[in-house]
Amino acid sequence: MAKNRRNQSAAIRFGPALKALFLCLVIAGLAVGYVWQKSQIYQLGRQITACEHRLAQLRDENQKLSDQLAVLRSPVMLDQRVRALNLGLVPAQPTQIYRLVESPPGDGAQRRFAARQDGGIAQ
Image (cartoon, rainbow, N blue to C red; front, side, top):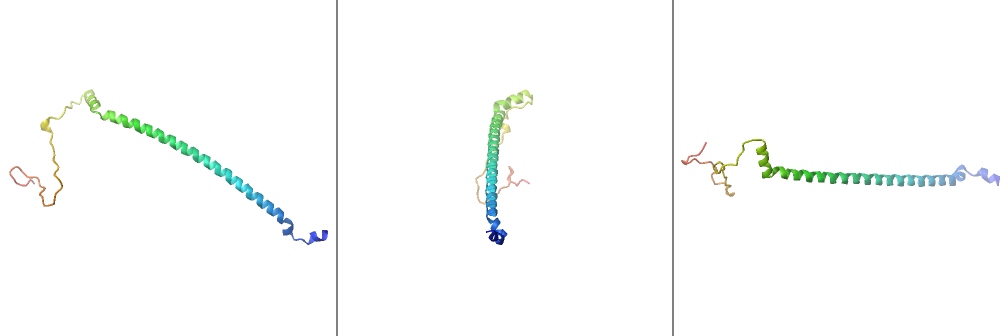
């Protein structure tokens, strides 16, 4: 029996051991990959939660600023600010208001020059 062992090649004697070692390395690699993947999923979940929280804060702040802008643009508030700063502003008189009438779109044949009262063309 000893004679047969001496004649066996090294590959045949260490083959099962190498297969077992390779199988252990594959299983260990898969385990490390699984743990890394779960860690990445956890970290991404935390980032998503933080971003959602920040988005909610920004929406609240945007709503508050929008409400504040509406209050500051109100006629009552503007009138109070004018009085507080003594700007001396008064409502416009009807003679100070010019109403511009927009003509409907037409063909290009219409003259679009400003005309004088006497019928001449203004330069």
